[in-house]
Every structure is written in structure tokens, then in C-alpha cells.
Length: 514
Image 1 (tube, helix red, strand yellow):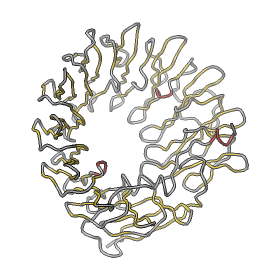
Image 2 (tube, rainbow, N blue to C red; image 1 turned 90 degrees about the vertical axis):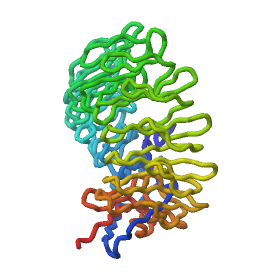
Image 3 (spheres, rainbow, N blue to C red; image 1 turned 180 degrees about the vertical axis):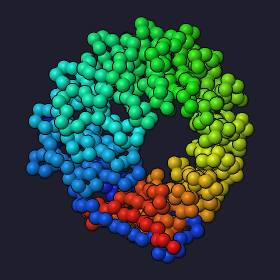
Image 4 (cartoon, rainbow, N blue to C red; image 1 turned 135 degrees about the horizontal axis):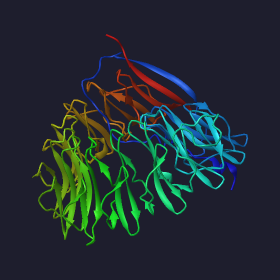
């Protein structure tokens, strides 16, 4: 295998891939010259080893290239240091997209490169272990030194090859998916193997020993003060909260445990001694079912919901109260204020949206339930025969040949609503019930409202050219627009990455002061 193949680990997509699409939009059009266009050429778009990786907001791009038998990362058009190899799949952006990291090989050693600066060298870096804290300020990964593992936290180039911060020292194994920061980034935990036992290390301190720890189960409470996880001792699985074990079960469900948003409650799904699925809330198991999905807390922590299967029927259980029986239950959501709960259910061959226990009209398909941010409105996509439509507050809208279910979006105030639809072989965006101009494609996931809800934007293709459309008016044309964009900033500026003449551009639509 050539070194070139070993080192590529990125994830970008050119105008044909990362730049792909779906729909269009229109609202009250902004006056001419309402925006000043700032177009910054970041550099040539070179041939990447793998499709480029774009940050979630579509404003940052990275990819690896080979140059003089070395491999280097290009981030936002800026080439980084050349290395012998870059670990495949190791590149990550921080949640806000402003920072980046990846694992590289230098001679026979490995190092993590953070924001372009190489850290201490190790014999290996555990695949998939690189992680930023939710606020992007901290960074950690698992590494090997000889035959020992260690967690490296907030490393700097001058570190001497031992865990910095509160890593917890050397051990015999670290679960790659087990590293986690608290929501505020102040605390850090991971699962570590010591001899034939496993422990959870929190802020450098090891907890009780277990025979196994469920992969990905470590979770901090929202305030970061508590930590919980699922662990096995003997033949039984337990949920451990701050070192204290709950009752034993045959299985702890995937995605469990969870904390309520206020951190005062803990819930999880499990299998009891009768091999029935139960939901355990604050240590108390509920009734047994053949299968459960969830649980989920309401945003205020006061309610909990899950779906359950008993025999051939399904039902929703809300705070222990059983809902009506259906032939299947899909998506379950709470409104942001926790006052309303909605889910998708099937009755025979038809699907309905059930909102606060009330079943809506029947359709062939119901999907993509979404509450407005204030919790006062609800919408979903539906299919009736060969046609698709969007239902808002129980009222069906115009029929189209297709609806991009992922496009349904309320404005921040909840007063406005938009989605992408298909009409024949064309795509359009519908804003507040008004269809906008038709395009050959609309970039999937690009539909967005400005923070004040006054503007709506998306990316679209007409012929071979791509534009960003603001309230129905297209901007400058490019060869491609990066997936994830455009993004409105708090100051009203709209930003995205674009390709023109084989070069990467950062484009900003800056509101002109009145």
C-alpha cells in the first residue's frame, strides 16, 4: 500500500458532491443594494485525496493533498505542514467550525495537529478518539506510548509525552468513542481498561471497577456536575450515577442513560428479569413491554415520553399515562416549552400526526414533525397518493410532486415558515405559503432564516451555475456552493463558501446600513 493511500483522511466534496442540492424561496424582496457582496478568494481548489470536509455552518473547508511525496492539509485555502501521512478519517472541526484537528505521522511517530500546530509525539493515536469540547475551547484524544494507553487533554507542542491536564495516567486500553467533555467544557471523562477491568475516569480520578462499560454510554448532566454510564458486573448491567450503581438488568438500552435538562432526573431503558423492556425513571422501573423506544425528557424536565410495543400494537407513554394504540409509532417530539408532545403513528395503512393525544388527518405518509421555537405551532410533511404537501397547524398546503422533508423550518419567532418542494422537474421554496422562483436544484439543508426572521435564504442551481437566493433574489453565480451554507450570523451577515474557476471563495452578503 502506498503512503499516499495511507494518509488521506479527509472529507470534502467538489461542485458535484459536497455541492449538491434541493428547492427555492421567496418573501418580501429586499430592496436593491440591500447587501454589499464581499468575495474573498481563499486559494486554488487542488485535487484532494478524498472529498473535502466542510464544517456544519458551511463556512470552513479542509482537504488533504500529496506534494513531493508528503501529505498536507489545506484548510480554508491555507496549506499546512507536510507530514509522512495523515490518518484516514481523523480530521475534525470544532462544533463552531473555528478550530480543527487531525492525526498525522512523522517518521514512525504519531501526533495530533491542532489549528495547524503539532503536539507531542506518540507511538500511536487511537482511531476516532479526537474530540473538541462543545464550546470548542478544549481538545483531547487517546494515544499509545509503548503498549500503554493514555488520554491526552489540552496538549501543547512542548508536552513530554505524558497526559496533560486531567488525563488520568497510563492504562491498558481506552475506548475510542468513550472520550467526552461536559457541556460547558470544564470536565472530562473516558472509559479506561486496567488489567481485565474497566473504569470511568472523571477529571483524572478513576471510579469503581467493572467488567465492561457500554460503548458511548458516558454522559454528563447539562450543568456538568454529574456523570452517568452503563456498566456490567458479572452477568448484570447497571446504570452508575456519580459512582453509585442502580439495580441490575439483563441489558441497558442503546442511548441510555439520559439526564433531564435540569439535571435532576435520570432515565434509561433496560431489560428486566422476565426479558421485558422497561423504562426506568429515577430508579423506578415502569411496566414491561415487548419493546420500547426512548425515553425522552421534555425541555423543562417535567415530562418524559417513550413509545412501547405490546403484542401487535404500539402506544406512547407520557409520564406513565398510556396513549391510544396504533399499528406503529415513529418520530416523538416535545415543544420547546415542554407543554406539547407530538408523534407520528400508523392506523392500518394510513399515517397520522398525534398532537397532545389528538389524531390528525390520515395520509399515506407522515414525517418530519417540527414545532415552532415558541411551541405554539407545528408542521409536518405528508404524502397523499402521488402528491406531497406540508401540513401546518392541521391545515394542508398546496400539493407538489415532492417535499424535501428535511427542509421544513420555522423562523426564530415562529411567525414565519418555509420549505422546499418539487414541481415537475423543477424545485422551489415556499415561504409563508407563497411559492418562489423555480430552479433545477436546491442545496439540501441550505434553507435558513435570518436571526430576526425578516430574511430567508438558500442555495440553488439554475443550469450550470449556483447562486445564493435571499428572499427570491439570486446573488452572484458560482460553479458550486459548499454544503452546510449559507449561514446567517447574529449581525445579519450571510456567509458561505463557493467555488469559481477552480478556486475557493469566502462570500459574505453584508447588510448595507440605512
